[in-house]
Image (cartoon, rainbow, N blue to C red; front, side):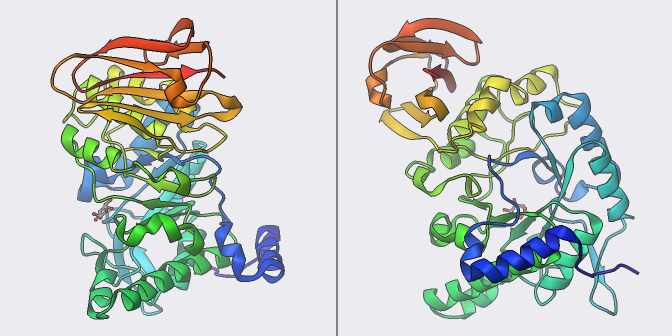
Length: 395
Ligand code: GLA
């Protein structure tokens, strides 16, 4: 028998906080994600083929590859882990996951955290059991297992929303559902990062934080194809002001290493995500990845841009045809700047640093080349087709 009793100092602090602060406390999630969450998620590579052994192997590989030491923490099980509910309504994993608590203990023993997945609707996107009507119970179950992260995917809740007949009523259903799980997670007293997944409908970036979300998907699903990755990444222009420590725009998980793009294209993918202050959730098989994939995913300087402590998302500075410049303000007054050549031919691109808000000559570093370029006030360079030159300027 599991015990659902609340207890301990964390629970008391949460309860006290709720009494003192009241409903406004929703905007400050119990699990504060000061920088965009980093980790791995099963969906992009394994989809329904994820099981206990796979998850353990990913945790092992996250440590062995140096990814943990580079900042990756969450091992997230996506859809298809769910089994049935017992007579009391308690959810159990299916046969692929014989003992979720033991799996969480294993992941924790590696210095990592475990994430899980559900839906506010009765069914998940893959047709498994969702949390509708069992929110408090499921949150308690996750907490008892030792879960540290929940991706809550709209899926079948869209049916009653559509049936509601008006946008206002649909949104009321959606907001209530996301708030309900937020309250349920808080009531456990366990810090659980709350990831909203509703594909960027109804400008979720305007309200995701107010329903307790630490991050919210801003787009439909990514695929391992350069045009789709780009479409998703570039669609983030204009969303910078909605991101801040604790509340992140999420343009979906990484495809780096899944085989559908070249190394140049994967560097473009990771550079854009770092400029966007996006969560970095690797979506490949960490246990078989190549040295090249590992080098891309663990590049410390790119990760440092993504995880910059100021927590300010970057944005597009200019676009001329397939040549784009994106910049992100960094703590200490510097900038990360991406010079993107999205065309099918090599191209030359020049940027004056005044265009990214910097005056005079500043320390300039080519991040992927790991090369200091001296003090410059502008930079002109050749960029391969589908490639990027990522610069770190100033601080
Ligand atoms: C949706 C989500 C994906 C994944 C699948 C699982 O499509 O957007 O990220 O979680 O559901 O079924």
